[in-house]
Image (cartoon, rainbow over the protein chains, first blue to last red):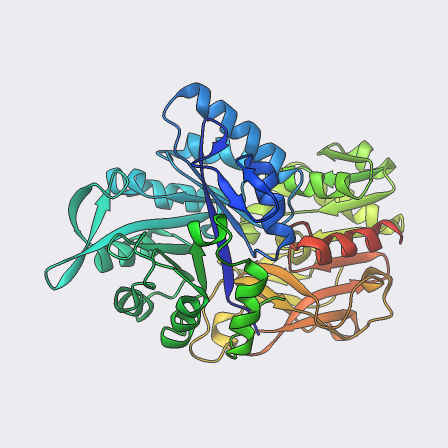
Length: 252
Length: 203
């Protein structure tokens, strides 16, 4: 049977991994290409690069890094950050990305999801959603999680899938950075209706958080995290061994 | 020289890079002459069957690929490229394929048990039905490879090389004589994928 995926995520600005990354014995690694190779050899199932550059020059650096990564790392590569139209899809796909994730760009113009799905196929279009609890529901936040769009997150995801998104990354603003586990309630609500793969993001603090994620929300397909991998708190291999010991199917 | 067929479908950068990584000389081309004079040919593809089939016809590459197959050269279809090698597909209407592999392409969704999503996206393990086939020379039972697909081949008969389990057995690789296909993406399947590409280079 298909396995649950573990996906490290790298924020890249001006060609370097933001804040750098510290591994035991490796020192400080801020070169995205080396880091991608390191994760791929360590058993990562996929990689996500977020381009958080604002300048055109930084964009160019990013595309160069993408090409170099895709020439050396042979696992799926998703790219997000600053995707606002078909031209952005073309730019990163030509540089070696396999999937493109849209977030604020899709909120501003939901038509981009369908256009990209028709041009490149649904498997290529990942809807990334930053959501936070507001009263009894969850709202979609834009601009890196700073602006409440007022959109109901479940409605928005339903619409995005209807438009042609082939996967959903659900990032909980409430659990992000807190390291006390994924937002299981929100994930459960999305997995109840989503017929495309759902990737959980935000809140992973240790291996047990992933065990709880896949045990308590069995329809979740993948877990994404950044800092617990970057700072060597746990290796992907060790995490997968712990998942396998808990009866969760992973690629070892 | 190995030629990757360029007919305007999908990103060929990773595929070309993966062959370069295992030391192959590779060219990405839509030129019939180049395809006919290369030693091996790869037919890639992502997206919908009908569109891809129309593009092949538009560039008259369907005839070229039949000639490549008739020349006896190793021809490998990947993902949608593999599906195009079969007789027909029922994705968004009925479409004729190239008819180089026995069987047809149908939607997995109605065949799957409840609770399984389409597309199948992710790493799944291979069950080898013909482990002696040269394409699988470097592959072990249970090796994991990366899949992204909603449709799959049925009725392959003895052309079936390997399956994967997704609630039901799903065709993962098939071959008849010099024509081969992988439903998964060897160029995205890490070490296990590169080993399959190496095996193809040795055929």
